[in-house]
Structures are given as structure tokens and as C-alpha cells.
Length: 188
Image (cartoon, rainbow, N blue to C red; front, side):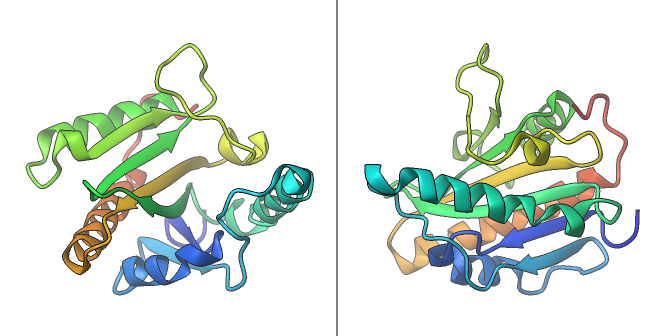
């Protein structure tokens, strides 16, 4: 692999770009390369008659990431943000059992993470609850050549809460970068 182990993608949803830039500021480019999508899609739910076009554009945007990841990075980290008045909190979403186990173990053992604030959510595994499903193409989230991790950070509306959410996101991004340098038991 060439480049940093982790490719952090920000701005897939244009409303989240400023948050992504705040999280990416000051990250070590030797560990985490940042790919900014300057004019992403809207993160708002489409109306029923707009769903087909939205999902098609969403899938096409993610497929454009493949040349940036393949052969260059071992992890594609997809940063998003949402709202939670009781936050900040976060979901790490991943299909790979080895990654989910490693993330769970590290979050459990580190005092800077509160267990109730960070959940590890299986992606595409309907036998597990909770689990996530997505319109992101399977060749992105279940690719044998790299690991896809979705990071959804839920932010309260207060300035202090926003800052705490940014710090939580940055800590999780750095944790992913650290784990990307270790061999994991199962990356599928």
C-alpha cells in the first residue's frame, strides 16, 4: 500500500463538510489522508418521488472513491454527523468482525471513551441487532482489499457540545488510524 493507512472522507453530505474539516484539522497525514468532497449530496431525506435519483447519485458518488482507496489505503473511514440533544455520541459501522472486535476492546479499555457514548454497529449482518444497512454499494462496504468504516457522530446543539463532538470524532479517527497499523484477526 502507498500512502497513509487511513483515507478519511469528509463532505459526502454537504451539510457535514464544516464538521469534517474541523475534525480533520491537525491530523497526521502520515497516518490519515483526508479526501474532501467539496460539493457532496444533501444529507436530507429525499421525498418519495426523489428517492431513485438520490440513491443512484449516492451510489455513484461512493463508487468514485474506489480509485482513491484501492492500492493506496487499508481503511476507508467515512465521516458523517447527525443530531442528538443528549450527545455527543457516535456509531462506528463496519461489516468486518475483526475490526468490530478490535474497536470494542479498545473502547472498553480506554478511559477517554464512555461505553454509552460509542456503539459498534454491524453493517449488512441481519442476524445481529442492532445492525445497519445502506445504499452504499457492497463493493465499498464489503471489499476484500480494504476495510470500510462509517463514523456517525451525533452532536448536541450547544457550542460546548459541538466542540466535545469534534473531539470525540477526532479521538475515534486517531483510534482507527492506530488499529490500521495492527494485524487484525478477521478483516471480513
